Amino acid sequence: MAKKKNNKASRRGNAKQKSEKATDQDKPEGKAPEPSEQVESEKTQLTSDKKAHPEKKSHLTAYIVGSIVAAICVSWAAPEFAMKLHVGGEVFLRLLKMMVVPLVMASVMSGILGLGDVRKLGRPGGYAVLYYLSTTVLAVVVGLVVVNVIHPGRDALSQEKREAIQAETGGSAAKREILNDLSAGSGITKEDVAKVFPSLKGGLKGEEPSLTTILNNLVLMLFTDNLILAAAETSLLPLIVFSIIFAGMLTTMGDKVASITQMIGQVNDALMAFIMLLMKVAPIGIFCLVASRFGEAHHENQFTNELLQTGWYSVTVLTGLAIHAFGTLPLIYWFFTRKNPYRFMYHMSQALLTAFSTASSSATLPVTMECANTKAGVSKRSTDFVLPLGATINMDGTALYEAVAAIFIAQAIGTDLTFAQQLTIAITATLAAIGAAGIPEAGLVTMLIVLDAVGLPVEYVSLILSVDWLLDRFRTAVNAFGDSVGSAVVEKSFAAGG
Image 1 (cartoon, rainbow, N blue to C red):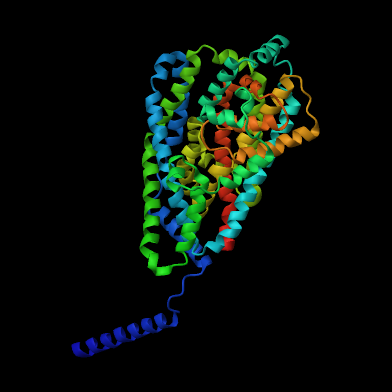
Image 2 (cartoon, rainbow, N blue to C red):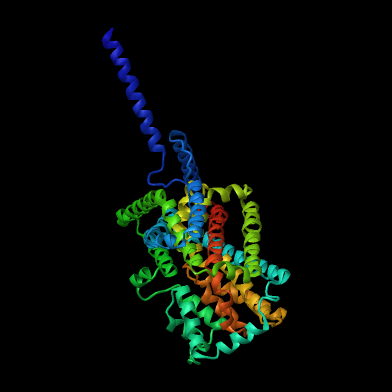
């Protein structure tokens, strides 16, 4: 009886093995899963992971908000103490910036390798550039409408003060002061600022900025003759171009570069893990950053007076940014995704608060990528490619600010701009914003290009220098939100093209 049972079990086992072999033989060997199957597999895996490891409710956003409020209060009550916190804030900012270059290169390469074929990047890449260009134009239009309705430059400058500025700007001492302010605010050397704006340095001979100059510079920004130098200077555009070309080449080499392909994915995962670790100390770093900068402003005892003097200008810029952030961008998000845009904004809140604190799109990029992917649910293939590109060329807030500032200065000095001149401002602000580096207050130098395009005196930029550092934080947050919306909008094109 035992032998008969064993023989029956053996026959059943052999039959099962033959059935499995036959099933395996029916499957075509070496055939990669279809893109739709791969996307469905990723979604299934993500769902199962969430069920297996339910996400704990994070209070990090609340901690960051609390740290910003506490920092402002401390800077107001004890500005000298707040200024001493500069080192802590600088350490946090440098840790974020340290991650930008390796994360951008690894994420872009990982995104291209995930597509499997660089040719599939054509449609998402085109949609991303079109989105960024369109939202920048919309931001400029919002800025032009708001500044013409509110008219903040009216009575902003008395006749006596206007004559004083005109008298001072004729001397070399005043020009040196303007150069010092621009150099300190933008991080660009005084010599480079003077080369772009010869009128600020005793009539230095050089090429006057124009639309042609801007277009030429935009093309040259895509390429570099020294990749290491571009990385050292955080010039992201040439790094992105190199990463796309290099990863695209890897997709054509098959198994010969399997180890390199695997290593790039592992490096990208490790860098994102480091970002999540860094965010645990973000409230402390953000507290030090905000407290030191606001403390410096209060210590000079001029911040309140200067804010009152430029109050209508600040209100105009903030109104335009609010309309774009809470109206234009959410409407675009809803139109393409049919999802609640304000819930998406809530999921991106950590990145937006970090952008406000650092005033740098590039430094915020690691946090933006982490929030978009893990909290807002945007696919990794979209965030890896779209967000690094957006941090470089998408400057909605900067473009809006440049348009408002140019017309504010024209109104303040009593210059009536024609429709053609305002159209020139719109075009120049769009192109100049794309060329603006994602560093604090870089929009100042590009704004001078906008002023020069319509013949406005660049020395009057001193009217808004005192509050630019504060407004820069708001427009950086708008830039970061525009980037994240772009990744969600372009996401569908990856599935369609992949």
